[in-house]
Structure formats: structure tokens, C-alpha cells
Image 1 (cartoon, rainbow, N blue to C red):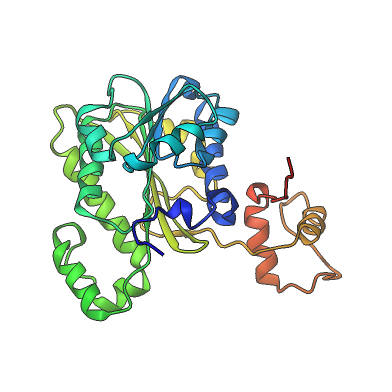
Image 2 (image 1 turned 180 degrees about the vertical axis):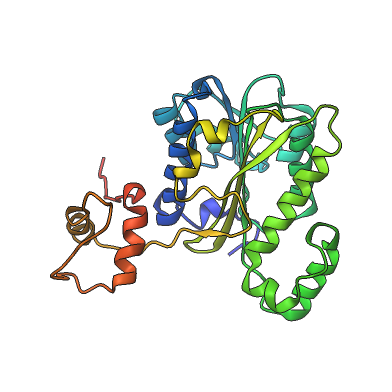
Length: 309
């Protein structure tokens, strides 16, 4: 298969279990923030591809109708345009870097989700740094990056040396391979702080997400809210009550089992008031750890059905 083929032509974005769980968690996070923010007035900027999954969900559940989808592959413009689920989505045939340099309107409230489907690059770091320079209080940023490390120690060593300024010198090859998401977290935070230090006005960067998951590839997602230095919006919206919200260095893993529809419905019927799955007869034969993993994500667990039309 041609290496230039986009990931959307290799994988159906709508059928990734843990990715869909991540989308739903982000929606719940943003819904919590409607206590203080008018999320429906925000502009959403992302990579719609041909599926526009997050665009559809953000419009349906957050009522956002100011949307920009960025795409680099100009040869596929007709296909991207055809698959837009709503006419109000503004398709821009630009890279994220080009758009941040000359296309974005920093004056409007923004939710930016750059869901990259490849490994981290200096271009990504520059995107993150630039957003930190120009973002306003109450703007939100989410970054997703391929978190698969190389199997070759030499490649990892070269990577650590190339990005040493963003990673530091206290992570060796073994640790980087075992906990590559931790390395990516350092790089994203370093880029944000670099941009923050170049601002003309002070701002607080409140981390919201620091998570990883794996469907076909291991992926890492970082999320943050830009706040005024005296703001306490995260506390006021009770965001810390959400299990997946992480303000520290520990990476939260979306670890959820693959279940049949019958298994899912049965386990849902076993969830008690304490939100624990009590399947005393163990009719399915699943290990206790699997039940616990499902219980942590049952509210976000998607159901996939064939539709013939």
C-alpha cells in the first residue's frame, strides 16, 4: 500500500472503540464547563478527514456550529467537501501550521483539537508553542499524537538527543520505550511553557487531560484550559470529579475490553448505585479486572451496528 495514503483510508475512524470513548469523555468535560462558559458560542478547529466524527458529536451534544476543518491533501479536497455533514463547516486546505500563521481568528473563543495521526515533529511543537503565545483566557486545546516508540534503541537514543531541550536528560532509552507517553507529556508541556514565556500578557495553563489509549496504534492526548492567572474555573466546574481528568504527570489509560452487545447489556444491568459492576454469578466468565475496566468506562462505551440504506 502506498505510504502516502492517509490513515482515514486505512482505518474507519468511526469504528475505533477507545477513540470513541475519548471523544465522549471530552464532550462530558466540555459539558461540565458550560456552568461557566458558553461553549455553544465557541469555534471548533480540528481535522475532520472524511468521517467528521468529532464535528458531528460536538454539534449534536455541545451545539457548536462555528467549525473549521483543516486538511493538507489538496488532491482529496473534493472528497472532503462531499463528506461534510453540515454546510456550516468551513473546509480549509491548509496545514495546521499554515492556518495558525495566517488563517485563525484569535479574537473568537476557541476549542482546538489537533488530532495528529503520526509521530511528534518540530512542526507540531511549533503549533503548540504558537497556540500558547496567542490563546486567550478560556480557550481550550487538545493535542493527540501517535505514541508508538521505535523498537530500535539507536532510534530512541537519537530521538532523545534531537528533542533534548523539550525532554530533559534524565530519561534513558529503556524508560522512554516503556513510558513513551510520559516523554510526549514532557514535550507538550515544555512547548506550552515556551510559548507562555513569550506572551505579552500573563496566562495560566490548567492541564485537563494526560491520557493514552490503543485501538490500532497507541495514541497520546493532552488537553488544557487557558485561564487568567486569578481564575479558578477548573475548581468551580468540579472537573476534578471526573476520573479521567489529570493535572499531574501520571498518564491515565483508557483500558476497556472488547465486548459483544450481549455482554455489554448484561454488565450494564449489573452496575449498582456505587457504579460498580456486581456480576455475582459471573455468567460471562470474565476476570474481575476486566469487569473493573468496563465499569470505569461503561457510560462512554459505544455500540456499533450495521446500517443498510
